[in-house]
Length: 87
Image (cartoon, rainbow, N blue to C red; front, side, top):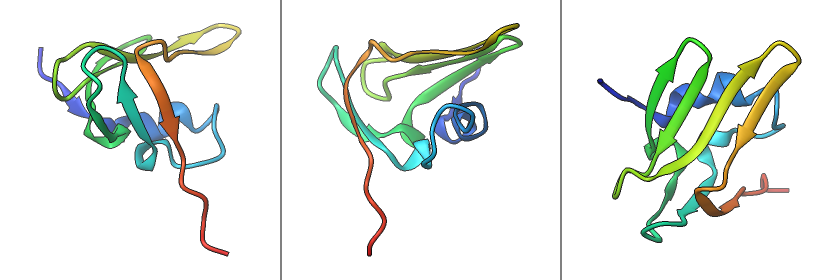
């Protein structure tokens, strides 16, 4: 299966977050690689997206569409850092 880059998560995650998720930095819980979410390897399916680490391909996050809303599982990320806009 061919992967997309993490930029495809922007639309799916827009309902969940008030910031650009692709610019956020996260650390993979499996290999400790630190990268922007835009650098993730993303696999799409009719029901959502699976984001994998660019380094070890461990699952970082899953965004799934359900009739009741959007579900986000980020257990593959140790943390996510969002830069605040300059004031």
